[in-house]
Amino acid sequence: MKKFFAQTYLWLLLAMLYAPILIIAIFSFTEAKVLGNWTGFSTKLYTSLFSGGVHHSLLTAIENTFIIAIISAAVSTLLGSIAAIGIFNLHHKKKMVMNTLNNIPMLNPDIITGISLFLLFVSLGITQGYTTVVLAHITFCTPYVVLCVMPRLQQMNPNIYEAALDLGATPMQALRKVLIPELKPGMISGFILAFTLSIDDFAVTIFTIGTEGLETLSTYIYADARKGGLTPELRPLSTIIFATVLLLLIVINIRSARNKKQSNA
Image (cartoon, rainbow, N blue to C red; front, side, top):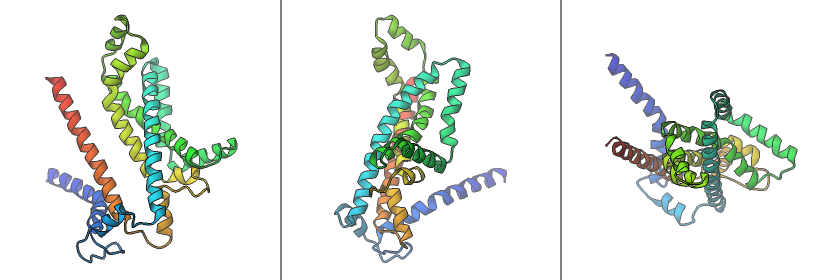
C-alpha cells in the first residue's frame, strides 16, 4: 500500500505539471480561437504560424526571443565554463565562498534581479533595449552554466591536464585539447539550460527591455493576455517549443547513457 500511494502521488504530480501543456498541444490542432472550444481537427494554426499569417509583432517577438536566447546562451556557456574552471582550482575555503556567491543569483527572486539590473543600467546611463536585455540574460544564466560544468570537473582526473603540460602543451592547448573535450557534456547541458531560461524569462526582461518597442515572446504574451485573450497561433508555437526542448533532452540523455556505457566498458 505504501508503494501504491507513493506511485499514485508521483503520477498525480506529473499529471498536474504536464496536463496544461497537453491541453495546449491538443487544442493547437483546431481552428477555434478560444482555448477549450474544439471545432474539429485542423492544422490551420500551424499553417498560419509558418506561412506568415500571424501578426507581424508576434513574428518579431519570436525572432527577438531566439536571437537573444542564442547570444545569451553562447556567452553564458563561455563565461560559465571559464568561471567553473577558476572556482574548481581555488583553495577549499575560497571555493566554498565562490560556490555560495554563485548560488545566490539562482536563489534570488527574478523580480529582485530585474529591479537591480534596471537600477544599475539607469545609474550608468545605458539606454535600455537589445543590449541591456542580452546583458541581463547573460547575468542570470551564467551561474546555471557553472553549476552544470562543475560536476564534470569534479569527475575529471586532474592529472590529465598536468600531464598535457608536462608533455609540452601550452595552457591554451591543454585547455582546448584536454579540458574542453572532458567538459563538453556539461557545457552542452549548460547551453541548453541557459537557452531555455532565456526564452522562458519574463521578470528580468520586463525591467530591462526599455520603452523603444522591443518585445520578446514572454512580454508579447503578457501584453496579449492583458487585452483579454491570447493569439491562437501561440498554441502551436508553445507546442513546438516544448517538443523541441523535450527532443533535445532525450538526445542528451541517450548520449550520456552511451558515453557512460563506453567509459564503463
